[in-house]
Image (cartoon, rainbow, N blue to C red):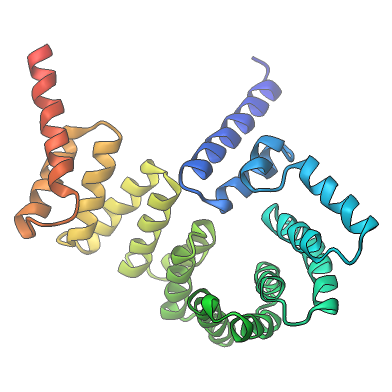
Length: 282
């Protein structure tokens, strides 16, 4: 194949890889990455709840019926889902002009502003959200805590503890790529920082990227070889990538330390049955 064709094929392959993992792990971040690589594929937009036809129909409806708050909310949400944050802000602002306390509009105003790096502005909308819809308290408190962390980090950008804390927050939100950015910054100053390596392993595991999990997991093992959760993750990844001969020692170490450790025994049994089955077949 010509170089340009190979390049295009790789781009499509990477896009479908991200798309499949995004669907499998219900990860919006990976779906957005796939959407960029595919050039706005409707297949990806379907899983983001924002098909081209759907967005066009909503846009037509709000142009013909500007007072339809339901359509405005749906359109604002759809734009957010596909990463059109400025457009989403514009639509949701129209909702708030008519109904300033509308909790869903306030919530997604906050989400949009967070994506645009305007955390201080987002804080106001999150507070309005929880005031008018206490059911959103848990999620909003997480966002407010993240905003406060960003403010502290802005004042002290080289603080490794704050960088690690922000990375951990993004992992909790399943925004693994964002988390990786902060974790890698920690490693620039401290290549064997345990918290950063732990976050990186968690991020890549959440993204379904086993090669990177093993790479950084082995580096983490240099800093803390006895960490039981790391041993479990390495065993789990080796099982999922069909390398039971490498998985068994890790899982046995986990069970030796804690014979009730979640799922470790079933993974070990799965591996042992594969190994014994392979011997019988040979």
